[in-house]
Image (tube, rainbow, N blue to C red; front, side, top):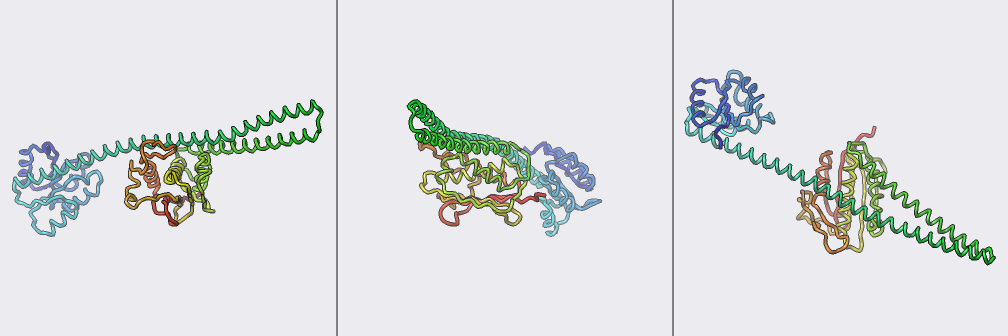
Amino acid sequence: MTHNSLVLLVDDMPQNIQLLGSILKKEGYSFALTTNGKETFELLKNTSPDIILLDIMLPDDNGFNICKKIKEEPKLADIPIIFLSARHDIEDKTKAFEQGAVDYITKPFQEVEVIKRVQNHLQAKLDRDKIKKYNSELEEIVELRTKELIKKERESILAQFMQGIIHNLRGPITSVANSMGIIDAIKEDIIHMESKALDQSQVNKSLENIWELNEMNKNKLDELLRDLNTMLNRSRDDYSSEVELCNLNEIVNREINFLKVDLDFKNLVKKEIHLSEEDLYVKIIPAELSQMIQNLIQNAMDAMFGQTEKEIKIGTWGSKNMAVFNITDNGPGVPESIVSIIFEPFFTTKPIEPSDIKGSPIGTGIGLRFCKSTIESYHGNISVGKNPNGSGASFTLKIPLADPS
């Protein structure tokens, strides 16, 4: 319903005001009145009418200038403006529409024409306002859903890493435990040999075996400690939620080191890492940069699931004031038909439910969307293309370089 809408009438001619006021009141509209440009902008500071009827000839300014100024104000730009004029020149009508008017009514006014045109443009505005409201509500729903999915994805990634960590720690710990058992057995043999006063050379040989096993245990425990320190350092760095000056190469290195707890990544994937010799400083929240790199590496891993030959190439470099991260895999690649929608929310080529195949990837449709929205918030961009050396996909992140000084 367009009744009870507020109409602003901008006119300084008493007869026009009386006629139009009578028409508007009869139709149930509320209306405000101004007689010049200054009064109009004073009123618009505190009032937002649903439509404006604007005369061209006013004492202090002309309607074209007033219309242009209104359209330049973001808060007022959506208000439809209908010009009122006794001038019939096509040039005036063209100029009115160029300044942003939605219609042009010539004098003398016809009551039916004024009513219908005002009704039509008010209804169009109401429809646009509804669509804008629905879009805003939809964006809020999508944003909330996106946050929930990002949280679930992070929890899923954390669970996968925890499984990898447990699996990766179990092997060395089992090895150390087994060697300790062997040391105990050798110790018993030495005691037995000493009790029989056997050749000292046999005792020495057994002691050498103990030293070797002890050295192996030491190396295994050092390796475990390095892995645990890497994980602890990463968690500390990721804790920050403030924009910081970061070296892209350090973040990439940290992510690669962290992924070494994934046995598939560590042992079954051929990796080529070529990081820039120069530091690539960017201003970003470290956790967000880590998450983007992590998502892209994990996506490459998922794309190659089930392949016997898996290859990943990771590189960084500087180009035209941008820090560049690129990852290329030899998976099936991204079909041309989905390139334009691959970064859309909730779009995924992976199953959304776990399959019967152990370790098979699942998708939420939010990882790449997170990468796109996040990198663009830093005035960077993400793109996808083909592996230039054959089958597979190539994803590239670009982030503006920052001055480290």
